[in-house]
Amino acid sequence: MPSFDLVFNAFVTILVTIDPPGLAPLFLVLTRGMDRAQRQQVGLRASIIGLMVLALFAVAGAAILSVFGITLPAFRVAGGLLLFFIAFEMIFERRSERKEKTADVAITRDHIHNIAAFPLAIPLIAGPGAISATVLLSGSFAGAAGTGILLAVIATAIAITYLVFLLAERVDRYLGQTGRSILTRLLGVILAALAVQFVADGIKALAAA
Image (cartoon, rainbow, N blue to C red; front, side, top):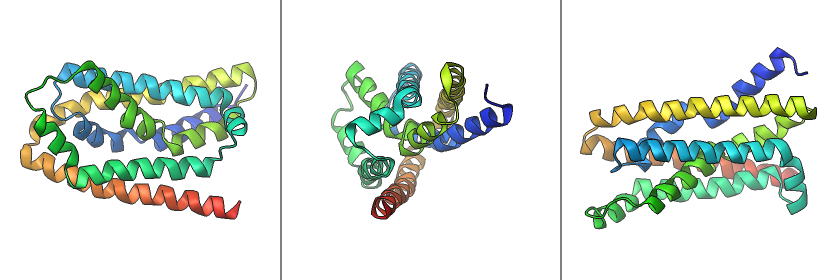
């Protein structure tokens, strides 16, 4: 059985790589225009998808990467490029322009599902960092009991993430249109820098391999 210290360290590692507080403002921006029920649906669906992805890599991550010949640095590069595309849209409000064109159209079930899957679940919740940490930690949790404990650790971190999403909804009422616009651009710049760092780390690791 894994020791308490190992389990606690795994929990902290997974929680930090997911970074629920950092995802909260992004969740608000990505779900702008939705009501509370729709936001809760997006948050729950994104959390479930994120849990399924991380659980898959906890159980068979090393085997999956080996079969497809994919390395962890390659995950970082791919995830960084996806995040940079999202950041570009946020900074130049391309996403807002599209929403303005369909302002009178109800948000569809497909739209809610799409936002939950990408970019919330992947690559923001189950991103390169969280996937990498999960695969690496799986080596320390051997056997069926160890894998079960690791899955419980991941589920707890995802549950905390979902609770953060629920609380984040209340913040939106205090942000006017100007506040949301400023927040969108600011987060876009931060996200762009994070994306570049993902790509740089991935390229560095690929070059050293």
